[in-house]
Length: 258
Image (spheres, rainbow, N blue to C red):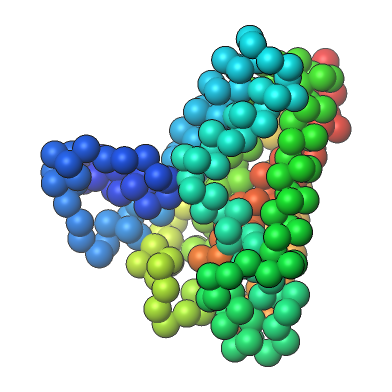
């Protein structure tokens, strides 16, 4: 149990910007295998990020319009994660849009600067998230909006983490290298459960449709990653999470829960 708590706290430290008290950090410690073991908690951390965003959205809703409240909730999640996944989306769009050979794609992806393609991708993604969540709130109500927000953060990360079980990490070194070892079956099941259960809580049929959409998206992204670079990178996981989150909000905005 103590080891599992260490793995979970390692995941919180890796996937968010939440500061860890010094005494707790000393207790957790660090070993190379912690990061790979922590990967299964990626969706659970996503649920916590979603809960934080939902809390900020709900509180802000009491003072401002729903549209403003949703922006503030989104800002809270960006602060919590350090725009970790949005950065991956920008790097991938820049790299896949500007590189031809696999080595060129990986070189552009490694560049810390954001190009025009990446900047446009971030702007479009954030605007689309905002408007989709506004639409969910207007049509389905505030409580459904908050539920979709939490579920979206968890399920999107569950989809992204599945690449660790089936695809190869293509960099010899990189920030994601310690995480990107093959995910064992038990860890994969746990990660998928963390992503699927909140969807089921919203609606079983909504969960089924959303899982099918995410499965199709995953198949398309996996084939594209293999064709372009032979596998995936940490940035590819960030891009996958962002596209999965958007897909969940698209399904929710089109869904009739009543």
